Each structure stands twice: as C-alpha cells, then as structure tokens.
Length: 177
Image (cartoon, rainbow, N blue to C red; front, side, top):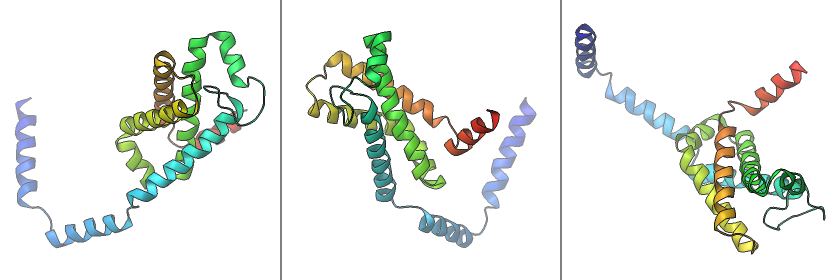
C-alpha cells in the first residue's frame, strides 16, 4: 500500500515539473470556450423544452384544475382511482419527466452536459418554478399537494436523466418488439 502512495506522489511531482507549454494550453482553453454555447442559449432551450412538456402534460392531465384540452378527468381520473396521494406524486413525475425528455431531445451533447453538471439544482429549480406557476394559476395548491407534487417532479426528472439518449433507448425498445 505504501508503494502505491509513493508512486502517486512521484507522479504528481513529475507532472507538476513537466507541464506542457502554457501557450498551447491557453489556445486549447480559448478554442473550447469559443465553441461553448452561451448560457442564455441553454436556458432558452430548457425553457422551450419545458413549455413543450407543459403543453403535452396539460393536454392529458388536469393538474391543480388546469387543463388545456378535453373536458373529462384525463389521466387524473385513472391516477385518482389508485389513490389521491399517488395522483399528486405521479402527476408531478409525469410533468417534469416529459419536460426533461424534451430537453434531452432539444439540447445538443455539450449543452446537455452543462445541464447535467448541476442537475439536482436544475431539477429542483424547474420544479419549484413550475409549482409556483401552478399555484398562481390554480387555487387548489396547498402545502400537502405542493410537497407531494414537488417530490414526484424531482424523482421523475431525476429518473429521466438516467436515460443516456432517449432516441437510442426508444430505438432499442422498437427492435425488441
């Protein structure tokens, strides 16, 4: 075990002494910075993905009394048959997972990596902003329903980020059928 520690210390000392040309490293960092998408572009694409997710979700589920189409209960009718707690939790999970899935399809690889670096904060912020918007639009949001919806949204968003590429995953599913 001590040999590994000595090897590591000698490695760190060697790399510190023979660090490459600083001019070359500066050029590489400048090129990478130039090719990186600006933050406003990533945020606007995430906003577009969330708007698409909102549209699709509110077409089929009347979350907190807000529904774009269909006069019936939609998915909420089926979720409520299981339990009201499950309905709130699963509506939040469905809502944010669809938005994150659209974001994965819209963002390019580098933008997706930037979002994934702080995914817990991004998912929490997106969930809380959405919950705030729903509470402004609807009077049915209370402490219990908000907490259940938030935890469902956070879990749903986190689960969708585990999918490496949605298109590859969907293609793999279609080949198995």
